Image 1 (cartoon, helix red, strand yellow):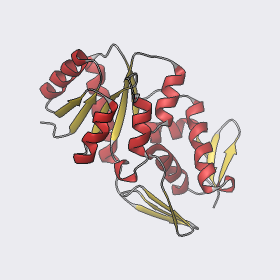
Image 2 (spheres, one colour):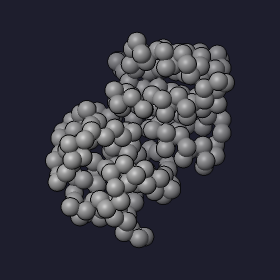
Image 3 (cartoon, one colour):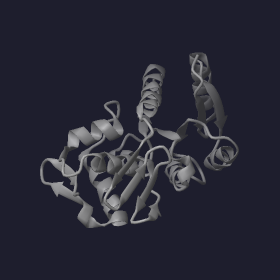
Image 4 (cartoon, helix red, strand yellow):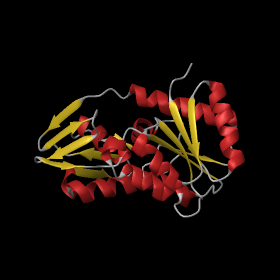
Length: 223
């Protein structure tokens, strides 16, 4: 029996009902709301482990909702999977850049959805809490907290995981395929642009001098 708590956010009632039925049948605890504001209100009272979030919704779209959720560091451990009818590269990059953990296009196949949910939850459990200290840096994986020169910096989940990976082996060149596998997992298809966007945002926050680009190969953290 799965004890994970999943929140479905979709403005189409038939999709909410179908997803809730199949997930409850699988043993998950499931709640469902009809729009982005209802999602934000819900997580103020109770935090699910995973949110299935529709992208195209009136008033607040899924990407904006995701950005608002991830803007609060206390929500960094909430997994977010986008559901959308738009199967375009731009949507995928924008969604993952907003802090989402996965992306599934409609129409949704139940077996595929369940497989991706189990994969996300499994990866989340495998990430053991630990702290890493490097010159000028203190990374606490459990709290998703980064301190640079004594100042706390709050990074979205994927930016944090990417930086933590690079910091874990100073001066080691991580290949792009290694970064994709360790940060996004083999179940998610993302392109090189996604990595580049995240590296750019990390550099904006910690400085350009810490991460070097190894052209045609990948990135490394400079000790």
